[in-house]
Image (cartoon, rainbow, N blue to C red):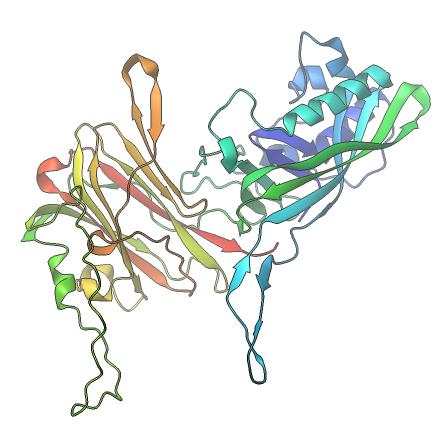
Length: 438
């Protein structure tokens, strides 16, 4: 990963191009390889001075903030290795059972240089850095989940839109066609400060400049490194104006799905039956039965995702002006020879995501990157309230977070009760590639 930029919890921490420009503008001839396209890639104008650019640390009430010139990245470690671990269990005989693999958290160590004019500017800089690495102090959204961090794999070459890096559950999804540095931008989630910052050697330069080394380590609770959503044709899809299908019972067909049986079963000597399991109580919130539904289809091009990367979905549903009931989002794998309109057998579906009820004006986000779901809705004069919904899986069963590990296209069917779907309801499905190192 490139060490020249870090955005953490919505605050720019490292920007080598900014620090070099400010130092040179102040009269310090810094010799450093530059990234001339960085300022445009993150939505800035060419860097001039902390006060004129309103640098992240600049405070009009603190004159010494203008004497701090920025943070240069000098090295980063912890992103280029997989976090997969496995503990083999020795067998009684020879060999071992390899066991299940699991991914630990990811620790990312940064080495930086702080540039300032005078001791007051350096003191302010380390004070600001320590505060900024605590996260968004005025926000209560992250809690124990940490924040989002954004980095680049190299000096970004694309300058499509300003960079947006979220805080906690506020995880922005760019509009299609407006991805920022799509080839180089990477996201890490549930990130928090593990240790530091620790100030190292301070060099006193001519002209009153100070050059100080520092280190700090971040920890990412989600070990994966995420790209931008794949570029497909999946924009917001209207749901309330889609054709009505039915009456159908979306769950009844699962009772007819054939379960493969072992071919070695002897018909003259059946396997003894297993002891009966206790019945699973039905959830009173889950709704069933035949009804009329609005039906929308979203197609993910199989050419769009990288061949080697896993993908996770990010689903957004806007209910519009009326409440929504019996929302079902169903995934199929497909290829270019099988159009989505031809898929109709739920027995071939990968999974279902079901919600029994969503209020009017709500936005449901099911985010496979952080494996969290939220529902946000207006709350009168109190503003916008975010809550955690209860999500059902296939036919009301337990929901598991989907991961699509093979390079394939996807067909996504969205059903909602026709009598409880507003005309302005809409849905968007995006697929995000993830990797174990970058």
